[in-house]
Image (cartoon, rainbow, N blue to C red):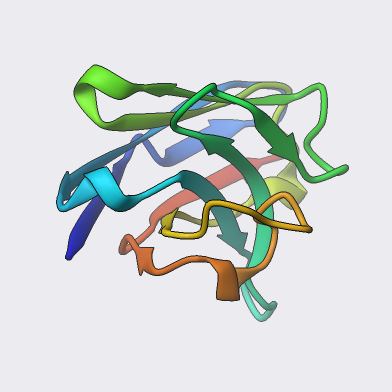
Length: 127
């Protein structure tokens, strides 16, 4: 089992920044990729970004390219999501997820490609 704990969410004004963290513990050696997803009120969960543990290759949703950066610290089993130029439409609960799949045709952009999920951290962007 892998446990994921997110932190760093909060309230920020439009144009501001936040950095989310996700600490992985347990049997993390079997995980290949970490991802971030968001779920806005009344909407389905959607992909934000993913990163491979091995070489740090990252994938992003078009909506966050140029504003968000995903990174990882292998020694600390931690993944980060730096969010800049935040917009009110970024308001959502942000979830960290871990995948056991070593390959993906989607850049690990689908929920079904992930095996473990955190509880989420809320982000509210005020206008």
